Image 1 (cartoon, helix red, strand yellow):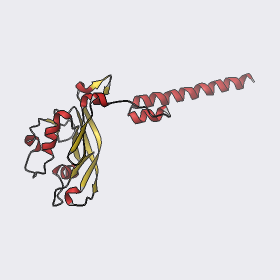
Image 2: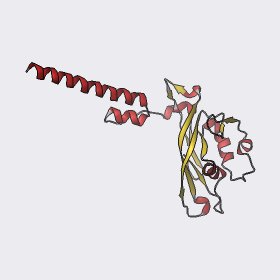
Image 3: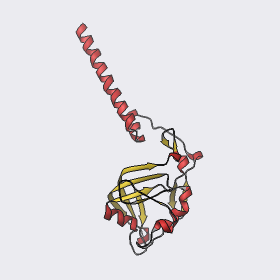
Image 4: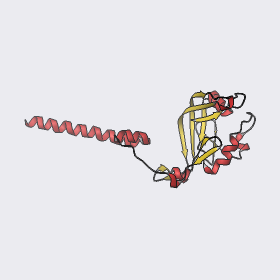
Length: 189
């Protein structure tokens, strides 16, 4: 998913039009190290301007779809387009297009992996907070808080398909053992 404001005359950014037209788009995590390039690429420019060149970014071609990704971004997604949600603003430039897609390929740099997981503190993603303000997530600001409840639901929140399968297999094994135990007790009686 990405969001892009319209310009003052209500024209949508090329990124939005391209995703809708081609049916695919790339998503690159915006990081502290890339903040100046992120800002440069946000400028509303004509379709003849290569934003990679304007922002002095090196391209890396996607593996499955015909788009360029930001080589220095440590987390990059290749996406198939799903829909665009337009949120109207009080002026055309306040209107935002939210483009939603399905991730079909993920590229993660080994430099941001710790113990088999993306280490968000190493990524140092930035987020636009409103106005001209941004925030950055650093290692000392990251904490874990596990939601109470069913372990299978928690595994689903984490996105760990292997853990979900293991929990489902354990439930099936437990049910089979219980059934065998009940059958054995019934035969003794």
